[in-house]
Image 1 (tube, rainbow, N blue to C red):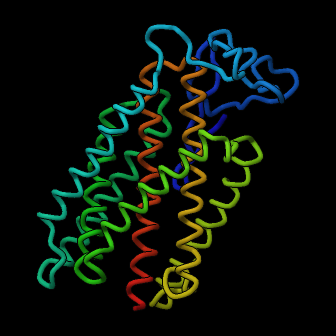
Image 2 (tube, rainbow, N blue to C red):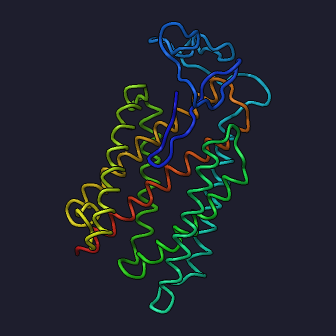
Length: 291
């Protein structure tokens, strides 16, 4: 299944010569493809999946050198830890007071641009490069640190802790809903989320264009009532992509993806969590700024 998040299109796990890899060229199609997902059991033809006869659920393949949930957790912790470290350094070293705000903002958006470039380079590589992923995390952390410090200084001192807790709550809620199958990630779900995300991003770009031309908030999508509505939509989209990420990890473990692919899973989860945090921070800023 191809997986994506609200910002970048990423490769999804799909079988390739007996194990799962990240493949952008093709997706399983029903019919002639022997690896296509069957309507009843999408893992039935996987030679490495072990079927749980009691519950009918696939288990991780018993092979060495394949991705496990521990690998994903470890890599994700390393990547998120790098984001947090970069944010802390930026928060302390790049104040957003009257004397330094221009410099701090300039460095922050420069870091965001570098993070974007590193993420795009990794997205088009066939294999994960830990240095690129951790580099992305470090520069993204710098951007988040400055933005978070600015919100704390100029909007609300409690906005950042609330956004962090909100992000954690979304992660936990989606994980529980996914594990209990309240959320079922399939092609229809993925297609709908992708279409909604494209529309959302196009509206944000149009708003940014009008803002650059006319000043202010353009069409008003980033403040006021519309800002609140679009902030909620952004968080919901992030939650949907988080469910797709969980599906990607589950498929990778089931199909026997190489262990190195856990870096790509960590990369995707980190980007999605950053998206949710930024939307939560913006929504809280609007709500508390209107008080």
